[in-house]
Length: 189
Image (cartoon, rainbow, N blue to C red; front, side, top):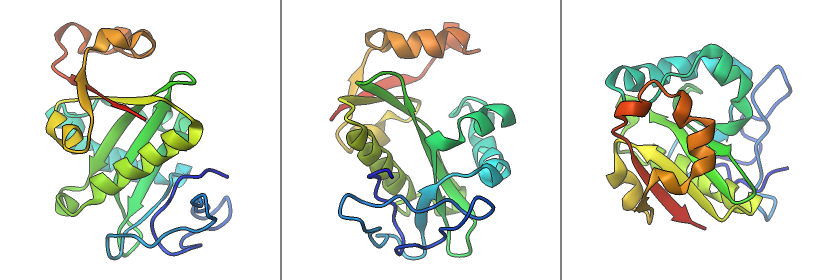
């Protein structure tokens, strides 16, 4: 069981393979209450894929997120954490892509427009960083067109070339590789 603290009441929304994902407990065995009323964070499950596609679509259209196919989301579903609103709808998501024993990338961070500036993105980011720490990683990076969000919480600007595993795994195949306008940011853990 992961040490990732998932916000919401203990056991909330946990279930079987046919239901929602089990809550990942904090190191002390509890799932702390959310600092956001009515919002719970949990592991993504395959039934979330259509909601993830819909959530990410506006950000793909603006170029803030790279497109992720249904196949890619299904294949990497275990990397995602989702935020659920009061009625169980997916209102945010993010993923932690591990590249080595030392490095992971925060990717696919998106929050539904009507939930922006409510702390959902920060809660998702905090949960993903906690998971990276639990894995024993030494740094997490993000490639973003909105670096201020990351810089406010302690990330520092970095050069993409300092992350050859990321460049080799993803950047060389990216449709924007030759005209990339994303800023690399990194957080030392």
